[in-house]
Image (cartoon, rainbow, N blue to C red; front, top):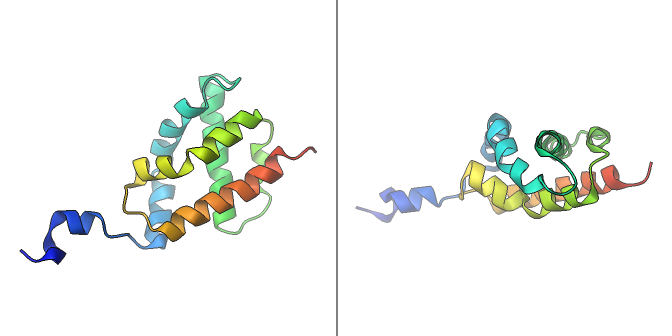
Amino acid sequence: MTAFLRPEFIMNTPIPEAEAFGLLQSRRAAFKASATPFLVGVDIDTPTAAAAADRLLDMTIAAYEGRPAADAAARGFPRAAYSLFGDNLVPLLKDVLGTSLPVAFLARCVDSYWRSATRAMAPQ
C-alpha cells in the first residue's frame, strides 16, 4: 500500500481552511457542549456557562468572517471566562473538529477570538 493510501496519512493531512470553518459552523452544538464545562466554576453556573460558550463562539465566528461589533453580545461575563475560553480554544477546536486542522485556521480563530474578547472585556 502506498503512503498516500494509508489511513494514518489521510487522517493527518490538513483539511482546507474553508472546510474547517464550515465544520465549526455545523458543529456549533458539539463545540458549545465541550466548551461549557471549562467555564463552569468561574463565578458562573452551568446555564450561564453554556450561554457564554455560545456567545463567545458567535463572537469568534463573526470576527473570523470580518464582521465587526459582535463582541457587544458577549459582554458581561467574568474575565476568567474569557481567559478560559481563549486558553482552551485550540484544544476544543481539535477535539470537536479533528486534529487535521490547518495551522492557519487555528491561528485565525485564536486571533479573531482575542481581538473581540479584548473589546468585550473593555470598560463601557
